[in-house]
Structures are given as structure tokens and as C-alpha cells.
Length: 339
Length: 286
Ligand code: SF4
Image (tube, rainbow over all chains, first blue to last red; front, side):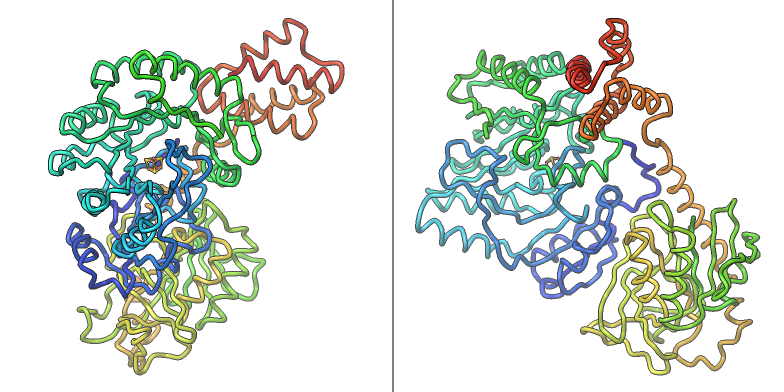
């Protein structure tokens, strides 16, 4: 992806838009403390900024701003069909943040949101109340780092820690925190619990360099995973999305070699595998806004509204990875994404 | 192109001479000055909301403003005395524009680095004698008569990051001493800062113009293949997407194409053969 010289852009969160009603919220104040030089702009509703007409996601991402707001409804969403539920029947996700500080070219958020700016909802308690109400009826499995990467910004927001504390109080709640980060500090400073699974997404270094901008290296992610496992955290490895490149077999073999050398696969709770797929509407938007991104411009095939790799490539890639993984981890612990 | 809009000629004077702008013919309702080489187009809109909105719409339509362009609204404004150290002659980049009559708020994106102080501005319909600055419980320190209208008209052509609003404080609400000469002086004082801001936007423009679509040779090959495979619209799209990916992923597509010509699979006799041939080419490419 062609990116403009960073010198032209304001630094991350140079401007912070805050809804008037949450200006005095303790979390707002705590977040603002991290950015003493930011220009703080008071707003009425986050959509006044987030949903403006004609915003350019990619450009905004180069100088990402923050919007601090209050979530009013939709505290829990049912899991989307393109996501894995890992055998959990009550599969939900929640979005206490929108958008991500990382900048993966293939990220569906680029096709889904009108803005590249980040939104943080500070009224976590309202989500917790909603979760507690549902828990009275049945167990829950919630992806809490869904339209964002919570651990990547944990040092600023501390939301993963809040979820980690919350989950300890509820036996019938399980949460998944998905991340591409290598945030060792979190695992050093917190205690593990049986209700929290950290799902680390892994990609070959080639894919990270080419498409997963601003994310930590494979080495850094693996080192963090090792630490998390050693500290007793439940770790899932997500080889999802697998990204095609001409020598994908070599790239994924090299990556697995590094994974197996660095971490004890027996101590990983499970792994997920899935090749890249995306809803047609999101890809349409992304193709318009990322004309020079190879991963976005790949000639995917449209299967009932979902773009995916041509069957031959998809099957080859997934079978290859599942085959290699099953040498290191029992087959029942490998979840292959299926429609 | 960078489109600059000022309400008054005296606000534009220093920019016109600095960039050697010459009067454009063709637009008669407003004074428009351009320098094609510099990629600049300056319009004197006249005072007030309606004049500003009409001028922006007219000029941007005639010149075809769009994706790779910028808009700058430059001029004087009133400041609220005793607030946030607002000094006469100081320049601000506005990060929030409030329309007085409707209380609607507009937020230009401030994504490029700059050396200006930032502030919010309210756009009213009358010359500000007593500054109406309490809007939706907010204390607004600058007041002008065009910014929010320029934004709203500009939004038909530009994204929020393409529009900048630069305002120089000329008075604290009492306009009796604001003469043409004084306005020229005030705006002239900031010429250097404005010029360096314009230079930065130009640099951004230049870089985003780099890396066009497929190069000429690939396009030639694309057209040839379309013809030789008797491509339908859908086949054309699929072929284009494959070539695009190969170019972006730095993959050699020539070899596969040449082989197919050598094996006499190309050119194809008809569309049916072409369809088969395209499928084979796609397999060979990926
Ligand atoms: S880490 Fe995940 S959420 Fe963040 S940009 Fe990458 S794909 Fe999107």
C-alpha cells in the first residue's frame, strides 16, 4: 500500500472529540491524561464526527483521532456468520470500541465504517449490566475485542483488564480477547482466569510486512504468547485470516516452524484456521478506497455474498495448514472455519 | 488544485501577488484569480453566507474540483476579547464550525500538521457587534460570516480533510476601525505561514498522485486479451482484477500469457473458447 510520508500527518490522537455528557466521566479523564497535548473538542453525539459525509478512512488512519462517547444501545450483538463460534451456542460480540490502531489492509472495518477515527465508549458498566441480565437466562460466550484490538491500546484504555475482572465474577461467562498485539505488560501485571481466552492472530512475517501495518512482528507476538502461556493464561492461536501469496506454502511453513519452536503447542487450548473472506459490500468499499492494495484487489470469488479465494486455493491453503498443525496439536483442537 | 476562497479582495491581495495569480476569464459573477502552474485558484466571494456558498459551488463546478484538491477559506474574523488570550492579528485554524442560525456544527478533519493555533468559530449573518458565542452551551471565541457556508457548499466536492479554515482576528466586535488597509496588513502578516501550509498540501497532493492505475503496457495487453478471448463484460472484469492483482503483488503475468499464445490457445475462435481460455489463464496466474 502506498503511504504518504508520515511527516505530513498529525500524531495519533492529536485531536480528541468528547461527547459533552461524558466529559467528566472518570474513564474520559483517565484517557485524556495520556494525551496532555491533544486538542480536545467537545461534541454532542459521536455520530456528528464519526458519520460525517465523504470521510476518507485511509487518510484519517494516518492521523487517527479519538472520539470518546457513550454507548446508548446494542450492547451485545449476535455473532456474525463469517466468524467462528468454537462450538459455543450463545455466541455474541460486543463493541466497546470501534476501529483499531493497527492498519491491516484487508481489515473489514475499512469497508464497514464511514470513518478511520477511533471511538471509545466509556460506559462499560451498561454493557456489563446487559451481560449480567442475559447470564440469568443462559451462559454466554462473548468476543470482546471484536471491531477493534483492545490489547493493542490496553495501556491507554485498560478495557481488557476491566473485562478480565468482570469475567472472574461469572462462572457461566466466557470471553475471547482477539489480538495481534504483543502486549507483555498486560500478562505480567494480571492474573489469568478460566473465563478469558486470549486469541493471538498469527501470520507469516511476509504477510505482516506487506499487509498488517503497525502490528508487532511474528517474533514479538510469539514471545508474548509464550509469556502468557507460562503465566497460565488460556491462549488460542488464530491462523485466520490466511492470506494468499505466490509462495504461500513456504511462507506458512516457515511461520509454523517458528511457532513450533517458540511455544509449547500442548499448552495452547485450541487453534483456528480460515482463509480470508469478507462480505461483498465491505470489499466493494475497500476496492474503491484501496486501489493499490494487492490483498484487496485479489480476484476473489463471490459465494452467496461473501468474497473468498477460489475454491482450489482456499482448500489447498486450509488443508495444508490443518495438516501441518495436526502434527503438533490434536485434531479436535483445530477449528477450521466453515460457512 | 488548491481552491482559496476569501470574502474580500483586500484579504486576497497578498496571496494574489505572492503567487502571481492572474484574473481568470469565463467566470463573471466573481473575481477569480488563477495560476495553473502553481495549481492555485483564488476566488473573492463577497461577504456573507449566500455569496460564499454560491461562489464555492460555481467555481468548484466549473473547475471540476474533487478528490485530489484542497479548499482553503481565508480571511478575517472577530474575536471574543478576554477569552483564551485571543489577540488581535492572531491567526487560527478552525476545528469546529458552528452555523449560528441553525446551531449545526461541522468538523473539518485536521489531519495534516500545521503551525496554527486551533479554535472553534461561529458563522453568523450579521456583522458581530455583540458576539453571540454561547451555542449549545459552548463558549465560542471566533465569529465570521462565511465559514460554515463555505464548508457546507464545499462538502459537495471535498471530504472533511480537504477543507481548511484559516481566520485572522481583526477586531473584538467593533468593526469601525477595520479598514481595507488594515485587513490587507493583517492578512499580509501571515503570508509566510499560509505559504508554508499551502506548500505542505501541495506535497501531499503530489504524493497521492503517484502510482496511477495499470501502466500503459498492461492496459494494452488487457485490451488485446479482451479481444483475443472475445470477452464479455463479466469476463473483462475478471481479467482486469487478475491483472491488477498480479501487478500489485509484483507477479509475472507475461510468462503465462506468452505461453498461452505459444501453445496457440490464444487468440480464441469464439467466446466459448475464450471463456475456457480465461479460466486456464486464471489458474496459471494464481
Ligand atoms: S488488528 Fe484486526 S481490527 Fe485491527 S486493523 Fe488488523 S484486522 Fe483490523
